[in-house]
Amino acid sequence: MLTAALSFATMGVCVKFGSAHFNSGELVFYRGVIGVICMLVWARAQSVSLKTTVPLMHLWRTTVGVISLSAWFYALAHLNIATAMTLNYMSSIWLTSFIMLGALFFGSKLQTKHHGLQASLVITVLAGFAGVLMVLRPAFEQGQELAGLVGLFSGFVAAFAYLQVTALARRGEPEVRTVFYFALGTVAMGLGSMTITGASSWPNHFGAIWLIPIGLLASLGQVCMTRAYSSGPTLLVANLQYSGIVFSVLFGLLLFNDAMGLLSWVGMGLIIASGITATILRHRANVETATPEPAEEF
Image 1 (tube, one colour):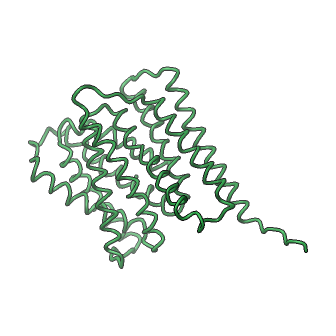
Image 2: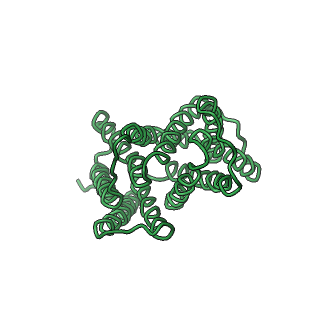
Image 3: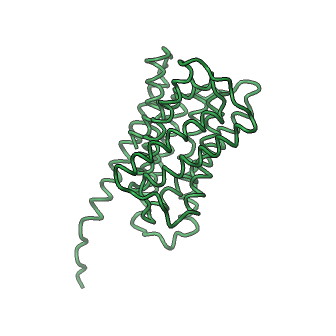
């Protein structure tokens, strides 16, 4: 998940630059085209078939994923990057809420011994998001209400996409196949959006060059994210996702000379601490699960 977070944070910087030359629909389209090419090459290299027995599951994952991506690109283009990133990273909060609601309604089916771990991981997720708010301190200006709602919507829908990624993995779908269909969906969504919003005049080579890293980084991030949600504990992965904020802040310092106050440094430390704590909690749970329970004496 750390590699995915770094890839998406870097892609966010590229999208911010690319949005000066292309609208959101175009960025989604070109990102999808490059993603499809990358996944075709990868699938061929690994001799993985792209045919699936669960097309409707892929359709749902692709639909919600593309909607979330398009909303996030729109927010990045119309909000400052701190606010757009914060709203999108609320997906972890939504995801935690969904899991807790599931535990509330289906608690009788859950293993009681894991309740303490789940509660602890929820606390780390909330602490991580508190760190996000401290670092980014999102702010809205007059006239940005619509973009703010769109950004909030992107995080909400992304939570459904992550849950579906986990469901696909349980059905035995490889990461490359899941990402391929998602990339295919972004191509279709981008084309549909361009028919409504139109296409920008082709910019100079410097402007167009941003499309390449957007597509490559998005493909790498999607593969790593898909593998993380497929094989890792959902709440742990959701918490580690906040590391993207740390990477974004470092990019701001190195590339844009963004100033950081004491609150931002404290927030970054809280994000890192919550990720480490969640990892330790999960490791301890794995050790306890692997250790056989002593036989009861009668």
